[in-house]
Structure formats: structure tokens, C-alpha cells
Amino acid sequence: MASGTVAVVRVAPRASRGLWGDAWRRLLRNRPALLGFVFIGVFVGTAVFAPLLAPHDPGALYPPPPDASSGATGPYPPRPEHLMGQDLQGRDEFTRVVYGARISLLVGLGSVIFGVIIGGFVGAIAGAAGGRADNVLMRVVDVLLAIPGILLAIGIVAWLDRGLPQITIAVAVTNAPIFARLLRGGLLAIRESDYVLAARSVGVPTRRLLLRHMLPNSLTPIIVAATLALATAIIDVAGLGFLGLGPPDPRTPEWGTMLTDSTKFLRAAPYLIFFPGLAIVISAVGFNLLGDGLRESLDPRLKK
Image 1 (cartoon, one colour):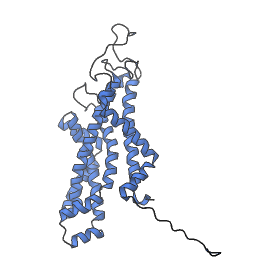
Image 2 (cartoon, one colour):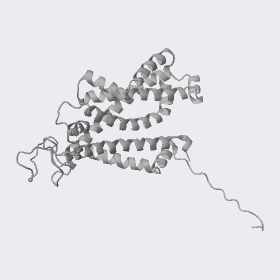
Image 3 (cartoon, rainbow, N blue to C red):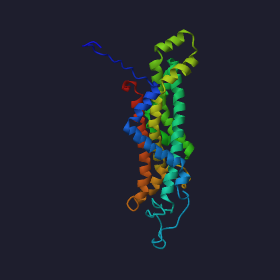
Image 4 (spheres, rainbow, N blue to C red):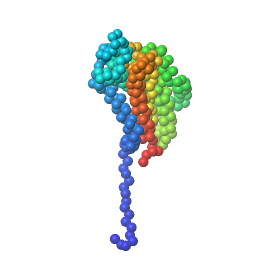
């Protein structure tokens, strides 16, 4: 090599892994999101494996501890046989918290799925059709958004009567306007993009254009919102139960109902409120952390 010649080393650009691959890589570097994964893993694992984790029947009544005075009634403090104590009826608190995770997961997940379906259908029609249909549907959505979610859910449950299916429908209706707004906004943003105009110019039918081209590019905000809505749904389900609108069967281990039954023992037995409240906090914080992580990971402006 001649003296003074500078060697130029060409570095090949890093190959892109695609939108979802890059988003997954960024998500794994997000520590709060990983903490959210851990919380959600604990919550989902507890719900799925509740019969294996719970040592007792959630509705069974158990005798008081040996050192309890004769004729004494619960609640009873934690001990090795009952790690979180016993409630007023003598039921095992740990078992009821574990089985309560299953109810919160099923109702929360079901309400978000129904909310995405209802809101997505309304938002897709409004964003794709436009005109009068858009105006009418969005005015209905505006009315629903103007009502506080928990008040709307209370009204729906009071109208449909108490029960887990009714709570699922109520929470789904409160979340549906959010998904409708998000999907409509996404469709309006891409309706005049080049690839949509090109598809229209070659005669692609509106239905195929919506399903094959527009919807797949508008689902990212819906995914993030659905993750965050799971946290809200779990809190709403517990809130309805706390207000006395939970399952009609008092033996059902639902976290909000457990909090209501324990408020009179706030000073005498604070553990009866602490453990269900901690379960609600862990599950809600987990979905919030994961939702925030997904939002940052899927934002193309943060792509590196």
C-alpha cells in the first residue's frame, strides 16, 4: 500500500427486522415494560393455575385458630394454615385472592375484546365511509365519551342487573368509544395516502381496500390502547364490586366485593383489605407499564 493512502472501510448497514421485530427489540430494552411483563406474568399465572396454587376451597368455611376464644367469630389473623388470614365467615383469604385473579382476568379480557370489536366496527365505518355516517356515529361516540366511564358502567349494570356477564358488557361499552375514536382517526390519516389513492385508481373495491390496506396500518394505536384498557377494566370491575354491583352470589371471590366486605374491619384486620388491594395494584400497574412500553416501541419516531 502506498504511503499516505487511507484505507476506507465500508460498514454494511444493519438489516432491519421489520416493524414488529424492531418494536420487540426496543421493548426488551425497556426496563419498566419488562417489570410490567413480570407483574402480568404473576397475575396471569395466578389466574391460570389457581386450582394448583390455592390450598383450600374459596367458598369453604374453616374453623378458627386453636387459640381463639370460645364462640369468637372471624376475621382471624394470618397463620401457617391460612397465609393471609380468614374473613368474617372463616374463608381462606389467600385462596379467595388467587381465585379472584381468574375472575378479574376473564372479565377484564372479555370486556376489552368486546370493546375493541364494537368500537372497531363503529370506527371502521366512520373512517372509511365518511360523510353523514361519520357525523352520526361520532356524535354518538361524543355523547358516550362525555359520560364518566364508571358512571356509565354503573347505569348499565343497574339496568341489566348484577352479574359477571353484565359487568363485562358494561365495561366493554365504556371502552368502545375510545377504540372507535382511535381507529377512525387512524383511517382518516391514511385515507389520502399514496398507496390508498393508487389502490383506488386501479379499481380496488372499498371493502377490500379497508380490510387489506387501511385496517392493518391503523391497528398499532388500538393494540396499545387495548393493553392500557386492560388496566382500566380491572379497576372498573373491582370498583363495581366495591359499590355493591358485583356478582350476586356472595361466595364469588371477586376483589372489589372482598374489599367491600372488609371495610368494617379496616382497623381490626387491615390484612383483609391489603391483599386484595395489592393484587389490584399489581395487575393494573403491570398492564400500564406494558402499554407505555408498547407505545414507545411502536412509535416510528423512536426507531433507531
